[in-house]
Image 1: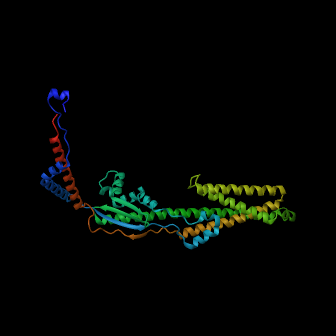
Image 2 (image 1 turned 30 degrees about the vertical axis):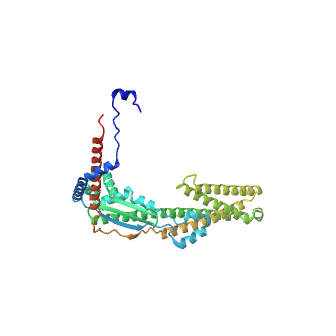
Image 3 (image 1 turned 135 degrees about the vertical axis):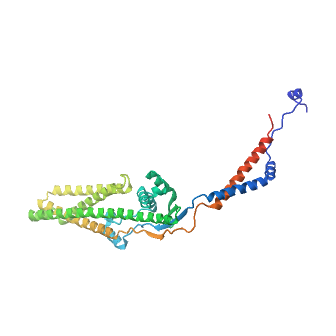
Length: 372
């Protein structure tokens, strides 16, 4: 086949394109096997020697079982069952999840207690407290195993005894914090229902005196039977208790949450029933005796419900269990955890071998490239 005009005029062919051959690269690396082996060995030896210049670190570990939900036992459950729909107000407080206790362990309050007790700011040679917190956070590992429900705390330190003391102190501070928080909540609930109980007793006494001073009217009893008065008292007491429960739920839940929505619907239904009953009573034009009798029955029913809630709150306070069950207490480690000399030496050897191989291949490709 004839050559093209430009090639015929010049009398030359285009330069061949350089091709990268895996076989050539392998042969090139094989020629320098001695350099690769001794270079990797030297890098590993240097890495191993460098580990002896590092300060040994010891890791202490403790694990514990956080407070569990449902403390209070069968006695509290039986009392809650007797309260019916109002058990949510006075039942035992549900304990938080393990993630919540992990967050408490990682809180600034716990960190500051450890910094002050062990003088970590001087130990870590930090000028500011927040720097000491960051160092403490970097040497501490707190995890929650959802499978077995245990929380593990690991702390690294150059002193094995101090590492164990730090790990155990995490648990001690958590125990102190949860006990104070839970006790405050239980006392608050018991005090709230105690005030409500005293107020209801006073109102019942007032209603009883008013009823006694109103006189007896047989026609009024016929116009407003006892059953209707009892129904009115029951509805009004349940309405008041539902309002208390709704206000309590709104203090901790969003307005659109299912619990708040359900209580709002229940409250609206009770108000509608009570309003219908009041309109019926007004239409029948009951006497003054009937209204006072109805108020007395309402205060009596309300006192019964508040008293049961108060007893439930007292029971919760007495049965409050915030015990943290330690599974493995941290002991002073007998062997260092860092630095891992074998791993560091092996990593240094591999990295050095890889870098030398890349250098050899790059130089081979550069020399094999055609000149333009």
